[in-house]
Length: 482
Image (tube, rainbow, N blue to C red; front, top):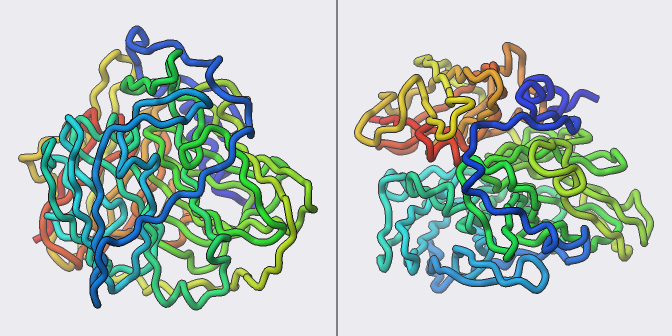
């Protein structure tokens, strides 16, 4: 079976991010003197806490066309490691933030109130919105302030997510808790017999570094983020019925790549990526996610009997030992259940790509082996006063994105648009990348070609590496659609 893990293995292994568990060559130089010792004694045994089900945010007002929400960004103390209260930055006190469920054609308006002592900027990752509502890195909300973000939801279904984007602070703000899921659905998705309700589950994965007191340590490019959290809980178990589940996998880490597989090698059926359902399901044995990427999968637990337990593993090991970061969570089969769901052979139709009107190249580069590295796009650090790409409204462009680093992996995220991957390393993308994407892996020395159409809104938007430590170091640029 050809898998995305095998496709990307060579490039990532060259960076030390081996998809078969190779040891890690540090991504960048890091001032380890700033890092506190890991709280090894505070980390619980594996699979001893239940996986939290993320709460769904309820509207404060519903009209015929619009759902209104209120969200307060506030600092709270919550138990993550058993018996220890950890300081967090949160949306409404939830870690991660509560899930917003939206529908194509219905507007969502979110009132954000900043009760923190740092500026914030809320970005709905993967959404097509006006410039004023995109959460631009420089369009920040000051402490004590509030503002409205309007999401028209004119795009099709997608598993999106929201997070802070205040420049130079986004990396730390997201790391400390400012992230959550936003699930957009439509009639296309509704009509499919996929698992629904309690069998459609968000699985948001990220890493963390705890000090001896159980507090989150933030150091730029910290290689000690070696505790894995799922929906905010360390190495949880999740009790399932012996039937099919839709799992909405999301990598909400700052830098960690994830290679997800079931420990027994059983089949995983990928049905969606960043921008919604794939045209056809993709049976595989593993899913690779870089920071910011999402993948919807269906796992059929009816292959197991009640009492069986199966571990979700991570095959990309680069910080922490294999016991810590090589295992993510455990599924415990505890009951039987009727199951009328299925995965159709055809999930959706995507329109043919238009004839490209322009081509451009983008080169990602990060300083390697220095204590305080800088990040560049096309040889330039981010300058909000500079327009790096001028795009005609309505244009459909082919972008060739190259990672110029020999060891450091990157990924590439564009605001405003969902794009299509055309080539990876000169070869067609595999089925897992056949749908709409907003974030794509670019391994060391690799070139990825993609096509995006800019026909929704005019304005200025950023594109950047979504390893947030890298974008905070300057690996970000601005495009202007006019």
